Every structure is written in structure tokens, then in C-alpha cells.
Length: 430
Ligand code: SF4
Image 1 (cartoon, protein in one colour):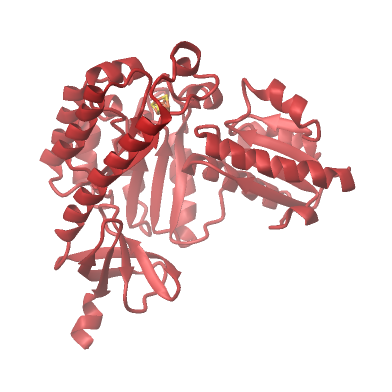
Image 2 (image 1 turned 90 degrees about the horizontal axis):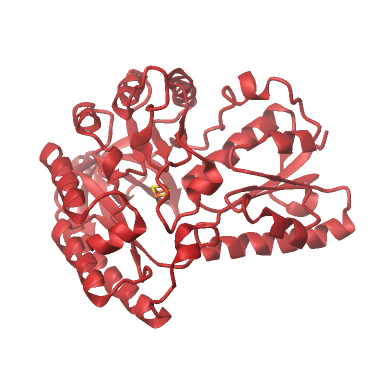
């Protein structure tokens, strides 16, 4: 069996979680990680095809792999993730140096490549292979795939249909993480509220969060990404009721105009989306809510774009992740729609959304000044600890604090992207 592996990852949290699981499996088989490709016996490139930029980065890595294999022909190379799928023929032709292509979460071809044990892999090995926690926060996929088929999105074609992990399996994994220093878990799904509908007992995300709340050493539970139609009142009540669940939502709207939403096949109208946000805020008035927006979608008129700006002004999100539309091969929009909004118009619209978001984020963040927020310290950068509020705000702490500790911080300064403050205890001592 090969002895050293180099694993490179680009893309979303789900991709990172897949890589961490594969790395944990490699470790369990006795392989050693290396952060230098040149030293590896096996190279795994975990790709993303949601944006062109992510694909370009993977191509650049694959270029390096091609050069390396010329001098090291025994090197074993695997490509996994969302670039593997419809485009595999083209990838095979372009990169004959790659030994196997594996779709997301399909680790078996990679294990076969390294002559690892293939029996029982679908049974006990992967369900009990947990990523080794590197700090107090961890990501745990709970539902894989997506059934929604939004026209611009490649995910359902590459990650397949929604498939939930059994509840006891998730509970075991989170208990293991908590026993190893994790204090906050983020439950992941492309549409995380879809959790459970395909399981025998049909539990929902609220049921799962109730079970996880029983784990003594776990302090916080987050979840993303939300999909308005799947976010039921029952789930929202669980979020509001359970003290460990953070009031922190990632709820993409994508557009403010009904005609664009319909063309995107998002499955909801503007009014239904607005109603959902009101429902969240009626239960949790201080909830932190972020959203995603695409500008320059095929056919988006000036009036459509104005409708997007209006909904951002009306709903006042904590953060807006904005992207200019780019056609992704394999999607419905790529096949059927003309990418007809000029690049300079897309850039202008992107800029306008960024301006709105920066102003509103600054105003919302300013309302935190003077309040005391419990912060889970996640990391220390340049000697400054940082962590997040229960609403998901990034807070820099101006005094020493231990990673993994929960600190009450009085917020003294607010910028559009983060907050800053000092521990209450330190102020009392001063
Ligand atoms: S809900 Fe739509 S955008 Fe989100 S992963 Fe599914 S298809 Fe893609």
C-alpha cells in the first residue's frame, strides 16, 4: 500500500468535510499525510465546479500533477468531487495521468487504487470513520445531494439525490467530536432541512437537533444551507426552543423578481420568501440571517435587478454573498438559456449589491456595540483571538483568550465585516 498521501481541496464546506473523512480513512489504514505533493505516493485532488474560478484552480493543480508524474511514474493520482461526472470523458482525455475519477463521497475507487481493504467499506468502515477535529468547531454532513434542480446549479448532477444519514450515525459522530474537544458543530446539507424525509421514521432536522442537544460536552449547533420550502414551522420552533441551537440562518434568495425566480426554478415566489423571513424573525427577532444572490442571470432586466435590490433593502440581511452569473456546463441554464447580460452590466450590478450589503451590514453590526455576546473562541490570528456570536458574527477579541473557551465579550467596535471587543471579566479586573 502507498504510504504518504497529499490531499488538496477546493470548494464548499461539504467538499472539505468529504476530504476530512477521506483523510481520516487514509489515517485509519495507516497512510501518512504530507503537505508536499512531491513527497506523496498518492495525490487526491478534490474539485468543485460551482464556479469557473474553482475549476481553474483544480486545472492548475492537475497541471502540476502531470509534470510530477513524468518524473515519478509510480505516483497514484485520483480526482474526486463535483468536476467528476458528465465532463469525465473530457478530463480523461486531457489528463491521462489520472488513475481514477471518483464522484463526491464515492471513496471506493480511491481505496481500490491504493490496494486498501474493499470489503466492509460500505458497512462499518466509513460510517465509523470520523475526521479528527482540529479545533473547537467541526462540520458534519447530515444529508447528501439535492433534489431541487435549480437551472444554474450543477450540484444535483454531481452529488446525486438527497440521502440522509441515519440519526444514530450522526449522533455517534457528534458525540465522538464533542469527546475530542469540539464545542460547536455545523450540520451540513445542500438543503439541510431536507434531512430525514428519506429515512424510515422520517425524523426532521428539529428531531436531529433535539437528539444532539443531549450531548453533554457540546455547546452549540449550527446548520446550513437552508432552502425556504423545506424550512418548516416545526423546524423553526425547534431552533427557537433549543438553547444549544444558534439563531443563525443561511437562506439564499438568489433573486428578488418573480420572473427570474421562476426561470431559475427556485420553487418559491418573492412573497413566499419574504413570508419565510418574517416567520423566522417572529420566533427569533435577533436571528442572524445571511443570503446569496446571483446577478446577471439570463434575461435579468433592469427592473428584475431593481427588485433584487429592493428585497435586500426590505429584509436587511446580515450578509449577502453575491455572484455574477456564469454558465456552468451540464446545467439546464447552460443548455437552454442565452447568457445575454453583458459582462460590464453584471459587474455594475454586482458592485451595487456589494454597496447595499456593506451599508446594511455596517448598520446591523453597529447595533451590537455596547452589548455583551457569548463568543466561542475558534482561532488566534496574529495573537488576536476570534470567534463568533450565536448569530454568526465574527468577533475579534482584544485580550488573550484560550481557543475553545466561551467568553462573554462586550462589543466596542463594529465594521461591516466583523466586530471587536473585550471580555467582560477583563474589564472588571482592569
Ligand atoms: S437547492 Fe438549487 S442551488 Fe441549492 S444545491 Fe440544490 S439545485 Fe443547487
